[in-house]
Length: 343
Ligand SMILES: [Zn+2]
Image (tube, rainbow, N blue to C red):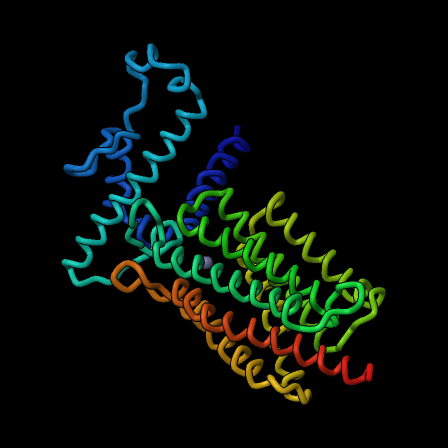
């Protein structure tokens, strides 16, 4: 009996602690909590009512078409209701706080963003889409330069030895920005995992690419030997995030280490090489490091739209443009070197 009582007490203390640790300033507010609870019962916040919150527990819907009775459909409705209630209670609480002269606080780990057409973080979505467009443009112009403007070998292959590596880089970048746009539109478990996984894959791959290009590794076997341990680590990390636990702190450390490592490699290389376009490398490295600061100095969204994370996505747009321009210059430079040697 005693053990039982102790274990119940311990359980209560632990669950209380977990509740507190899990909450942000905004959602631990009692008036916010009361508002959400009320809304999930009545389906309304003040004058606003949500159709998603009318569950077919009353007999009417049972006679409805089959798809209205699907448990999956019900789940979606409950989930939408939950999300609408949280959002509208948050907006109301923030208005009250503003009237009192208080600044914004986080709710469930996120700043209070204003939605546009149901999109959760419109600024981040727009900037992600622009990044995607920039990578597509950069990759396409690289492709055209390589196969239409520069001379080709007899077997119709490009002289540039790093061509296929940059093609994969282009694909991984576009994939990553696509999922970033999806995730910032609607933040659920699946979109979050897809965004994190593609970002890790891109970051890991660009680290391998930084090593291969700066050390001028051209031999196929050597490339495989260098890439193998990194590929193994990145794959394990992605599996860990998806199927074990999405540990934000650990993932942040992994991403920062991989990001800083490649910035350092490019910096050292830019300082040593006689590459004609090394200034572009310098601008990208310095710009990229400054942009990383935006991820560390987290500030609330200006006008409910532009927070540090959105601005971070904005800064990478011009950097991407310059980066692909460097890659094109590198292709031209290497090709002309190889042709000179051949003569
Ligand atoms: Zn993002």
